[in-house]
Image (cartoon, rainbow, N blue to C red):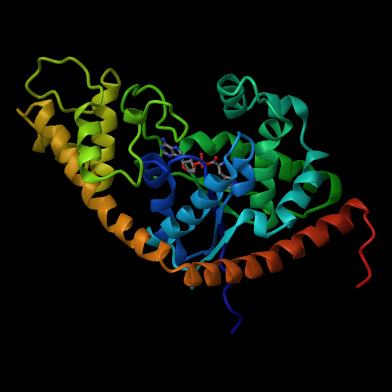
Length: 338
Ligand code: TYM
């Protein structure tokens, strides 16, 4: 019997700054259950990180930390392809071809480009603007159909679809058309200090984010300080559009504990914010602690991580090269004679 061809999943995180609870709940956590049913590739997208200024030694450390984190969170290198983006040169090569299909106007409209241009006004480099094209290249190289990301990346995946459709129309069917997989909860975790903004790695206020490496005391302190809403109601812990701070904490709590919103609201009936925030801290700590100790164990085993990365890069390169050769042929480049 012919072997069933599994659909492909691709996702990645930038090794920039501190990986946050938002990255975990919105993305990485949702990757692990996909490994059985899909052909998965999970990438540490280091080339993307270069669009904002990096300290080279820190970038190297963050990259390895993130590889170990993926595995500690449940990515199994024997089931999924785990690799570093810069180890597969086809990402940058396809990005060049896609650059000739993407329009300056559409890149100019990207929310993240506008946000980052504001934050890094002294370094609005071409890479920052080109970033979504490199992301399109990551996805299209592997003919990935499902992209598990948080809400803030939906616009980039939509642009990837537009680029793929345009290329296919111009040069005949080449790329699979990807779609986002958003988790029911956790796809938009907000800042603890400004619950109208997303929790972001690049936030200058460390109290606004929970980093995946924060120790239990730090997690508890940050959650106790989290902005809530002034409310005299005895049942102040409830999900509501006019209570963004509490709603964000409830979202974190239910995503970490597995309880429904209704169950959580019932649990805190008649209780104040203090009791609630401590329970959120307990739930977050019990999710993060085992990940942190496993990550530490893995980082002490460099030989294992290197073997995983070598195998990942080899497997990813084989798939990527196939797509790149096809693309080069379709656009009219002469294949190299080997
Ligand atoms: P990055 O590194 O900013 O974030 C990694 C993943 O975490 C999600 N995320 C969040 N989810 C919920 N709440 C939050 N506060 C939150 N903050 C971040 C992001 O949506 C993302 O899924 N461009 C991407 C990386 C990338 C990529 C790709 C992703 C490069 N190529 C190809 C998928 C496919 C990025 O900057 O993610």
